[in-house]
Image (cartoon, one colour):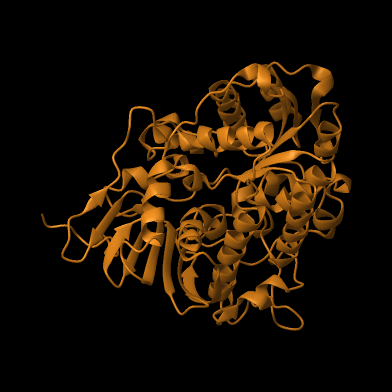
Length: 468
């Protein structure tokens, strides 16, 4: 049998690696979801779930032996609402009484709509910048779902951990070094408190990836030489236009296009594939070089790019070649590949030893959606008091994406410690210290980054503001 090396650009048929976000970004559904909430437009597409690679459902235990799970959702766009539905399904699968008892969103219309969906009463439905504080203060809450734009994630995670809540949070978890430092500190506190934390890097909970990566780590393709990661869409990034009475509102409603809210699509989406590569290596890269551009977004409001090409180096010398793009094109792929000294692999499901027979993961009848499985795993960790804390690993992968982004933005080689310890903050000061006190009003807009003109590591930082 002639099997192509998965390190080659042969991934058009890699449907098992494509998540709900790939389908949404290339569909008219995302474009029509404008302005419906804090995370509207990233709704989970159930068809994407149906083709996601397999996961193994856990055994159901006696529900009477398990504590009830009282969850709140912070951020009620498509992603937060989808996570709420996945949580409800997961609680049933785990044999636990699980209920959404409170919702919070910066926009009142999004909070009200979610309250109707999940049967949450008006006195437990909150809106505004301080809504997250109010919903975390509800009595009996032991499970917080964090699904706001990524720029708010670090501060909301810190608040949830300080309040003693177990957390499911969407990725990425920060947009810059200051946000990552908040995350690492809160991650350590969550471990000290014995809290359970799961992240929306669902491939870690997907049986095809789990089994294949276990075989890779056990030496099925020898020592790792290189890795390849793609999130190359065949369509452009959604853009909701400019709606709102203030610059702050216009940016939050169109959050994907501002670095302080999204982190650029290398962070917001491609972090999935980067996380898989970090998982395989068992570490994060230490250096990055890269390039990219803003091509099909020209003429539209916002700061971000629509394509990146990054080379990463791990401490052991292994290289990762990372490509992501949100441009209309003929070819597309969302996948990863690994080349070893004794063979190659598609870490979602396939291993090809040199001169040997290919192994492939086969979907099983009992397999369920990884978006549900990640909640099942978190619920079981809470009720059985077993270890599960993904806060550090998702922060590592987020910072990896940020490092690649800044290497491309600046046109310079960038190392891990420089990014982690950088003092330049893309967001307003209150975002990192007290987001509950933020108000509607003006907000900084940057020029789309241009190498040689944008370098946040300079003293003073080079990040030119957009012309009025």
